[in-house]
Image 1 (cartoon, rainbow, N blue to C red):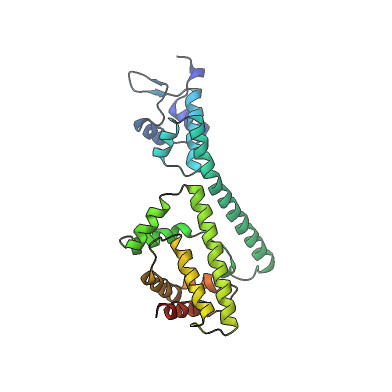
Image 2: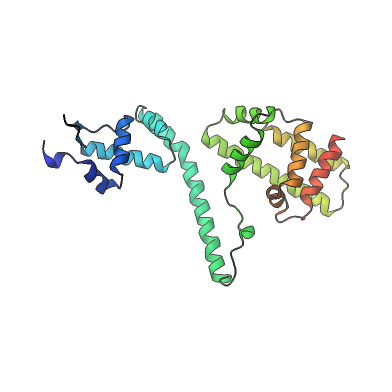
Length: 254
């Protein structure tokens, strides 16, 4: 064995900042098997092993699970690039969010240095994953959540993000139009308002295909009682818009 051709776990750790414990685990699950294992159990890694480890670390930065990374190495080049392509949009989203946070903090520190940071003025904390997990805990056993999950499972990551963006656009347009009705004192039982609640139902059905009148009632309760939804609906609009929409939904249902 030539020392220059192989590296000990300790040397690998120095090069990559990966602990010997992690290397041992990767060996155990057959994700990264050392090129040389001596009779007394000592492990030695080649330069090719280091290259594979660097790929593993890169894929972990893309939030791929170890199981997904394991299967990644068994795929063709085109299949590997498809996996990478699916994750590009996530990286772009993270980059944009970080840029927004930097801009907001820069503005705060320049203009409000003697004030405590006010998160209500920060437009877009990405908490969609938390909402999704919360919804699963609350409604996981309901027919509506099951329908939602079945629909989501038909989409890849890129399509999910594109779909979510389009739903957000449609909902914001709906909120703007309902805000117009409220500001101009339209009654909730007027035909125009009624038709817009029908449109809301159609929007919701793109995410929850079996959304019915009972589901609309759930949404009315959510708009009324969940301050996060209320804040999102009312942001830049009438502070009573969430209640107006909830009342309009009930007028539609009755």
